[in-house]
Image (tube, rainbow, N blue to C red):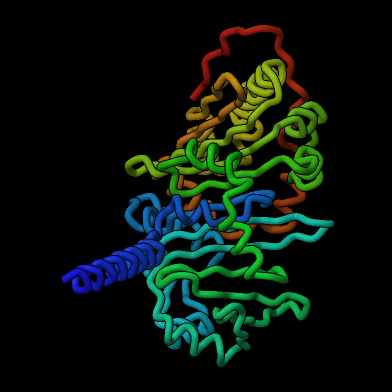
Length: 374
């Protein structure tokens, strides 16, 4: 009898251990969520870009954005190579991609990307395609695929880390990058800010590591520069750009974390001033004659929706600028995108006038801003 009890106890223990293992394996295999995706990114990233494609598929504004993008680029047909890819793999990102997160890493002047993508993958077809068009290797019992790109010095490495999740990078060691994301250390700063962006289907979060103001000054159109804005941007510790559908409209939010209250006030005042100057420029009589009415109306509508807010969270101080893009604004911009390009003579004539670069805006203290004109 004692032997039977002993055997039963061992059997129960084995059953419990096996059950726990399979429960853990099932949980790990099926924990496919926004939180698990962001938590698996490497903590030493300089920036993170996240897109919930599934949420956008359900949003009415996506159709307007897609139509506008197609009109602006003239791309109304599917690329033949992509059609062949869909045929061989059974994967079409427009229908099968659910969400993607991209970590940007800057090291020694070199930039690399690491991405995690969730979706509906036919693994057998995908692996057959990858073996056909690249090579694979076994690392620690896992198969990693390497596919060449148009750049001879750049190769994409890819691995299935779950049934519905793929990891890929153009860096040198995919396995090490995946391992760094699985390590608990270093995630706290990112996790705190991801939580603030909860419910936002698309965002870019940048950790200040370089002179962002200087980079933007080099790339701004029309040669516009502002030493004050560049200085304020260089002081920011984190920058986030986020977007969220709101009914038929789309709300875009830009937020910068400031080192102190003085910087927060200066940046808020500057952004409010720039908004007012832009509105004044759009109401200039000469510009009204030269600018397409639909385009001007769209920009006026966007500027009228701008709200600049100062946020004091105790341990951090931020400035947030938000604007709302309505279907009407998208329609007007789409209409302009389909118009023929101006002739060289028209471009030369138009270059003789326009809005002068906005000077640095300085305001002392808090004061009520003048009403915006329609």
